[in-house]
Length: 272
Figure 1 (cartoon, rainbow, N blue to C red):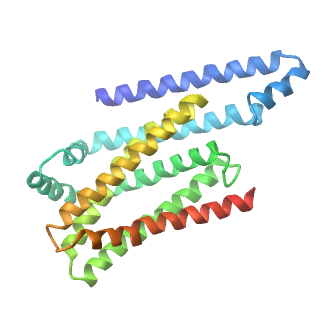
Figure 2 (spheres, rainbow, N blue to C red):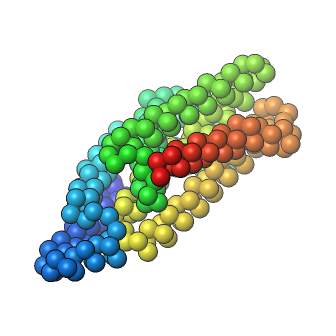
Figure 3 (cartoon, rainbow, N blue to C red):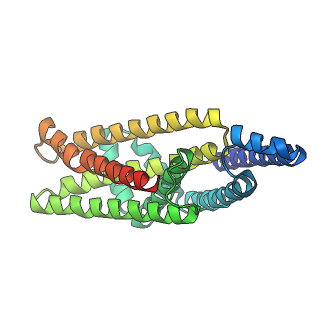
């Protein structure tokens, strides 16, 4: 409960900072002569200030309010699941097996947290696309819907592919274990992306660069941890060498990311 209170206070501070910043912009723009307004917009604020800044920030405020409320409800409804999920990262292998069995017995919070990850990953992607000026559409909701559909297809397909591989090679237990580790780390990433996105949207330009680099580093470390933990656990179920595991990562993890990057790059080049 104290963590939720601190989180809510940080969120309100970010919003109040944004409101003061927006009011400063409004008074600065509208109190200046008409000849200086255009120069102010072109030099300091290259986008349409009167239409976009207050409107987009308000939309983001409501989006983050809904997601924060959803996080609070999940935390209060499934407190034991969250405790076990947090403890899973810091426990020994024996206790990890116990925690995995306990978490696998609760499919409902697992599914809800997977949905929560897709929502936050979509928001984070939209935020980065807008930051770099690569937004697919001018409407935030359309960009969010496209990203959410994209992540849903990717991770649903990965889920069925992993189970199909386990069934084909008679390694169902290894597939279940790897899938569990994979989506457990995704849940942690989804929880982290919410405060990161909030800070990124309501921060100034200098802080946005720091938050972006830090968030990419944190997510990268979690991905690296996921691969290391998956290899150590899967190796106990099947005899797999590091070379074979590396080939799997290249075929099913790295190659799809490169393909996604290529598709997004083509879309951006067409829109420019």
